[in-house]
Image (cartoon, rainbow, N blue to C red; front, side, top):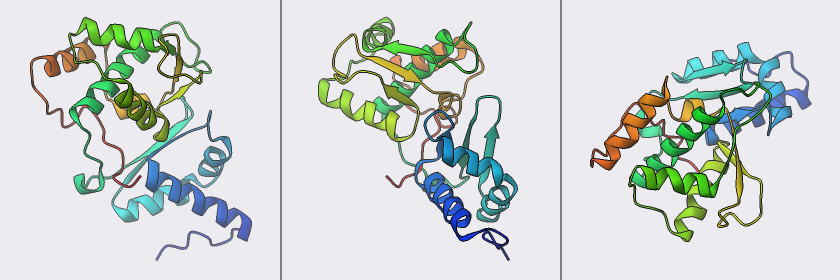
Length: 203
């Protein structure tokens, strides 16, 4: 039997509950954006590992990049990404991989909408319209994968900070593998079952 709040103050138990609900809803958590939640998770790492193990889930702590995420083995618990959403995440992951070279772990790669559009054009991928752009940016911000640094996200000069959680949203060891995955979409191969990790279904 699980006793998550055992030996915890009421306030600390409430904080731990917030972290669990947050992870069940959004999947990813990084210290840069949610320092308090991240530190609570670190303090109660063993409890969280036991809780998610009980659910049949896995919780991964990446101490090096100061982020964590939970993974459900049941596909039914995951959000089905559209082809356009999958391409968006693949392109962001590629840019992240290219730009992180030479940066310290405390720094996050920054890209612009112009650079993102350029990647789409380089792969001859269908470009998103303004409405879809807003939805794609919302997807990234909701799951803590990126952060707009300017108010007008439709401007080519709009900058986006890319977070280390992209490492787990899109799995790839090398830039070359990312190129291959994006090229697969160009050729009409839409299914990439283990390459783009779908976040939880609940928004």
